Image: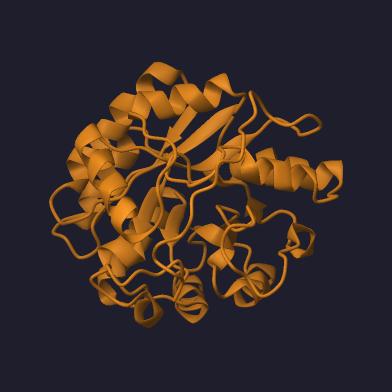
Length: 294
């Protein structure tokens, strides 16, 4: 388990996308109503790291667009049963002023009543996928409660972004992520529901090698880079994005819930020595294909 009181950095943030990078889609940006944002920030302060950027949803979106991000995939997740439908309506309302520049994802609480109906309503209203967080929502991907969610996503051809990696883990969670998460559980879902589009954030940290092998075998699995290319979490050896399948890895920042500059990972990608086509895939094209961004 990682240290649950990790440092915050004072590294300077740039005014725009680093020179030499293609247009950037940030495929992992968090938005919440103000009261939930405040609760999330307090939780991180106590159990993880000091969040550097403390903004409203509009502040988050405006900041990233002002700094050169071309398109945003906005995520939120329900912390308990009964709140998902309201959160989905909130997401729809927040995306509306941005005229196609934000792809909002729905959420649902696994196991709650009418989970598939909640998602179908969100999809019919224009949301472009689903975000779940196993550590917070305490579900097992192999459990029967996941079936209606998987089936609804597959039926609507909508991707499902699931924090299914075991880390970063905290003793403050109500369940043990190492018991309910893991690459083998993701593979079980991919095999049981052919065609289901899954995206696992953080490159599947801490099972980096296992997820890298999985993404080679399954055309319906994607990984996002969120936080693990930022030289923040301790890893056994430096992560080389060039070793990953080029059409199944995409950039995400985790903004605003980060303890360092907004563009830290973009600077790392700029310095990684990747060719122009690979960079364009990671930063733009793969997200467009996964989320149907025009």
